[in-house]
Image (cartoon, rainbow, N blue to C red):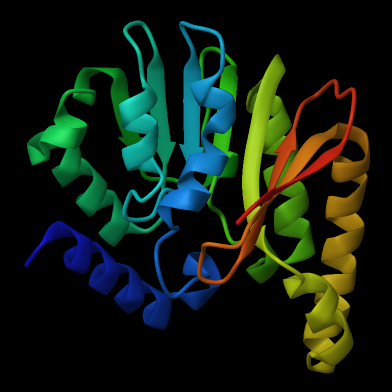
Length: 223
């Protein structure tokens, strides 16, 4: 079975079994991957890169192509099925194996992950809208604990998911999402430097780019 179909089937199986932590029915599109990794593609070198929630590696494949000599790449993934897929790719897939000595896959919750040095780029695929507000607060605190003062955090969320579900969702879900919104909005207000709109994804998504010290907020559209 071609790798593309193998990854999509594995992703859909985990979606059915672990919706809360998988959060989507298909891996990120190449357009979303390109937008998430744009700060890395234009960033300083050498760089320390952290990918959180890589899943089957739809964004990882893009990151690996952007790595340069001297870069270091860590991946943090909780799902053991995805961890196995990623480690297999770094062992045997030519697209990944060239970066195997620069990369390490860690199976643990992000909050338990520690690093000797901060990261210049953090790229997250975590489905934050599926999580309890308290967990999302812990995740953002961990993002900024691990991020270098001049580093960039890039993560995505599906367009209008939270605003719509706050209005039309079931009562417990509406209350959870309101609390979640109150957790996320202050981080966006203080740290967002740009929001990209990616329509060529299932579903369409926003990519949020944040820095510990931000200067401006821009919207940019990707058809």
